[in-house]
Amino acid sequence: QVQLVESGGGLVQPGGSLRLSCAASGRTLSSLNIGWFRQAPGAEREFVAAISWSGGTTYYGDFVKGRFISTRDNAKNTVFLQMNSLKLEDTAVYYCAASTRYYGSSARNYDYWGQGTQVTVSS
Image 1 (spheres, rainbow, N blue to C red):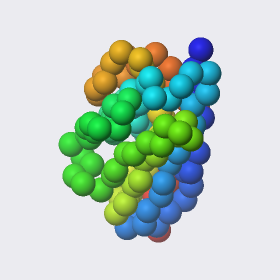
Image 2: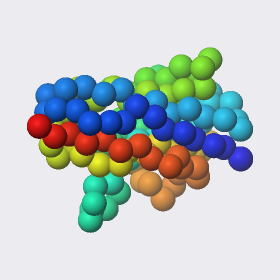
Image 3: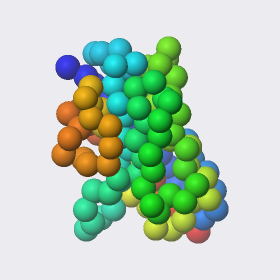
């Protein structure tokens, strides 16, 4: 069983930055592909980013447009999502998810999920 815990969310002004962390336990992170998703109130869950088990490949949602970068430190069992130039519409609960087999943008294909961390962008 894999446990994922997100952290790093908070309140930030438009144009600001946040770095989210996703800490994994129960399984070596280097065996897991990680996806980032977000969900705003009343909206469907939306794909943000994915990073392969090695960190050699990343994939981002169209809305990211170079503002977010996902990296990982397998030695620390942690994946990061650096979010820059944040906009009001980036406000949502952000989740990380893991899969041993799947790498991509479909939430249904991830096997393990964290509890989420709230990101609020407001002036």
